[in-house]
Length: 337
Image (cartoon, rainbow, N blue to C red; front, side, top):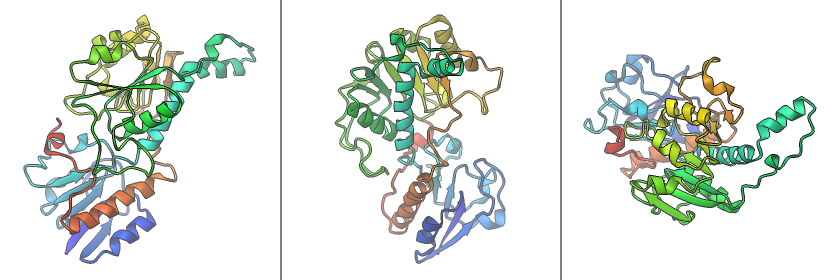
């Protein structure tokens, strides 16, 4: 008998799909939260499947757990648990966020190119200003995507549809992508959309021709502080930086200096260095920066819960049948590589 413990908000159809499976007992926590805290040891100690955003702080009480399904694409909350050595599988929610974050990327590129922030200020001040700065097209511009997972692939598909050139930087190049959840019709499963592909060691060549840089890598020990002064200075002074990934991937001091000294034209940031971003943080004051409160993934949208529970229900069936899980994290990823 497999015991499933659920610490995420319940989605009726998804829960029904799981509880209807033979050989399973489901226990759904009544007060799910997106944080780590102690959970009742008597309820989690026998569970061999955990569905959560963050493992409980008393995770050691879970003596029988064999698989963790995360409700997030990020997985740094698993670092230090030594899951691979303990033979515990883990999978994440890659694919749930691809469509909304890619749409955020497109929206930010259009807004930055047309300086929508200033147009709104003009409207509020009853200022009639028809300068060319508000009439820029993104068609023909070059977007560089640093990382080419699901978010990067869906962004590339949309950017190509709008006539943009797509450059991609990855560690190992672009290959077909299988075994990962994706919304039907989205993304680039065959790896065909980039116009140019750059690999590690070619960062300067990748950055020098961009109009937009989109950060689309997970936060790991290897990517924390990945983008600093050298990378930001390598961009054209007319380029914009978009970060829907994780704030600390870009070094904060370098980003502030780039904005102060004009190394870049501006930025759109959905991920930050503190949550919430304090009112006195300098990023609030820049007229050429768009800040959004970590909502690009749209986890409160009408689509998110269904997609997330689709992954979980499909993976429960795979786990029970001894099949490979979707979105399975590797031992290297679980170690923070």
